[in-house]
Length: 578
Image (cartoon, rainbow, N blue to C red; front, side, top):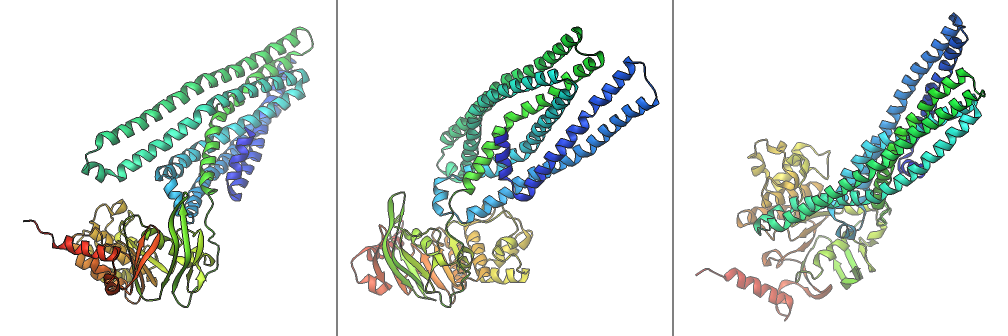
């Protein structure tokens, strides 16, 4: 129990940890105020038995009860507030901390770890912790401290009863340990089943278009049904394990009270305990385990808290890229790759690549699918760290830059655009939240999306669906370009930005890209001939190596992938339906 509490307190930041420690101290005061009922009862019982009821005795008893009630009320309120604030704030801060931590993880982490697992930790797991942790810690600490204070008070009244109460507490703790171990064995499966179900549901929702297109509802429905069934079985198993174990634990508490009552009666009938002490001890026999009983029930939840801490720490302890470099503002944006190699899971993806990209030039990267084109641009922007060689920007190794100062140099327009569930204006000013609406409109006009935005019901204040689900692919691309224009970075990376655009949007998208790339360094991955033929240099990448390089006319004179690529595209364009 103490180990789990320490784990959670270590998980909190210093401010919230102090709040929890403060609540513990207030919990001691709360227990002391609660224990004041014992001497109050003792004085009242003694006065009645000795027929010494007078105003002094009455005022003493009332004084004890008044201080006990008011003190407990005030202390309990502040203690609960401290624990509640600390519990909820800890989980809120951890979500932010995880979000910040994810920014600097290598892209391989997101390949190995499903979005569902990350989502489950940041939503379900931390939500459960914010609800459960506060209540469980409050009840466990309050019950433990109250029991300890009352047990000490029983020692002061009668050492024998105090020793018996300590033995009963020890037996309870032993049973509680066994109970928690049983629950722990099913808690892991319950949490894992929950994570799996979130992942499967998220994947289903994200892939609903493909599922409908290929009519594979049965297969995916069966995966969802299996994950839900696993979650149901895990929940039932957890309950059927916990209920009998907790029930037995409660029985021990009741029996302990009976043992203390029986011992007190024995001592009275053998003449070694006076009647006023007997009545007081009988009262204490019910009080001492009342709080411990509640604490014991909640100790089972500490396992869930501990597991939640482990899952969150698992993400936070994932090694980040070294991003604490200098805030560098290079004089030029010349890019150089010197004998760069990169492997992922023992599979070499980039193999000994040397490449120069001069400032304000256009470099087109073409080649077979899976050849390493996107990985190459990811290494330039330091989404990955190279295994061998180095990548420099403005003559400085990209590892020398702080990650934020490096990203100031790049804007990206991907084939798959992600827009946030927010207004169009806020999506465009995503990289510059302080930008005015006039600047947003100016960027939109350059990206050729102002007219379609103004045709929407709320114009720039129109809230689009998550991922941009409520607008077309070409419209999303143009908003993405407006976002990049707003950032005004000197290097533009276009990753097959026009690959899946319909003819109606192609001209506007091409014009938008033209406005974006004026006086910029352009690195483009493309499959369309018209987007690469005017590039200053064309790089042909195959199996992680540069197999050809040059301008369009030069490469057309060579036998190789590029010439075959162009010929294939020309043939495809000339196809007609008879």
